[in-house]
Image 1 (tube, rainbow, N blue to C red):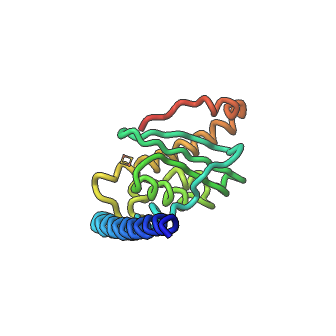
Image 2 (image 1 turned 60 degrees about the vertical axis):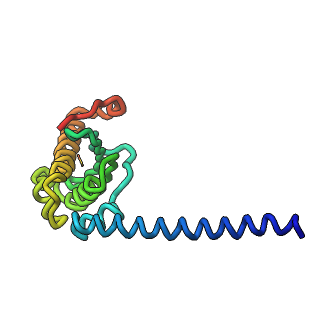
Image 3 (image 1 turned 30 degrees about the vertical axis):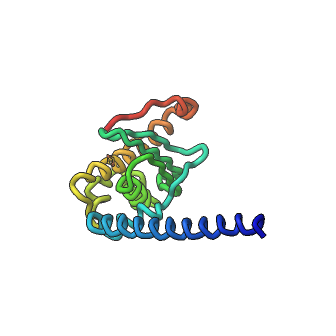
Length: 175
Ligand code: FES
């Protein structure tokens, strides 16, 4: 009885402890989301929590790794067919706003002509997200700069295909 009773008590306590921790975690999550909603709009939260086009593209026609002035990194890949962006992917180690901007930036240039993509600005990304706090505007600039740089990489790689072979050693472009 003692032998079976001791682990049972421990299990009960541990279940209680785990339920309490779950409750504390849920409350913390609720507070974080409430705070986020005070700062960011629904579109920003949606793109930050469910980013579109995250990943990479093998043997892409254009690739770039761009760093913002605050040190966040954004990588972007495009596949182009007859001057149209048929596939786009991004990755970032940045904040939630940067994830949202990268996600929206890729949505804005998907199925677009490369010349049209070059015209997408930080302001366009910001507007498509329903606005950003002033302190996060440079996250949209980072995504817009990634678009411009990846299209330029596509154009120069088209002219000089040997550039593809050197991409892995490519340094970051600071913006
Ligand atoms: S790029 Fe600096 S906070 Fe997002």
